Length: 86
Image 1 (cartoon, rainbow, N blue to C red):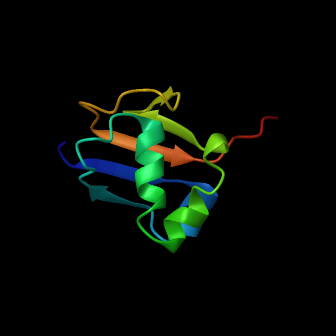
Image 2: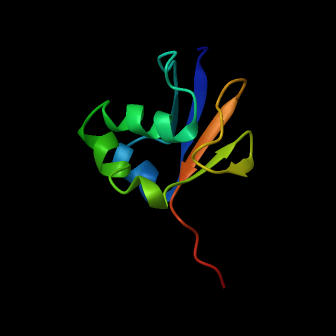
Image 3: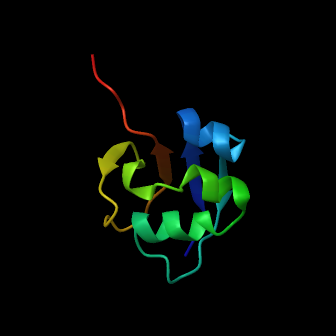
């Protein structure tokens, strides 16, 4: 797996403590859900940010995706909490 640019928004950013980073996940991380699981094990701040993974929204290269979306070939992955409308 090559390096991925990860971006964090709203309270995900606040809990992790940074707006983003570039990381290289292990080869067995194939989709968004597995990436969230892997990130949650990186430290307390990640575990806190992703503690309720079901509500976390994700986008690959600015396109909203579900947690089963493959991450192969992605340039940027963004994570953010659910949006409320109005």
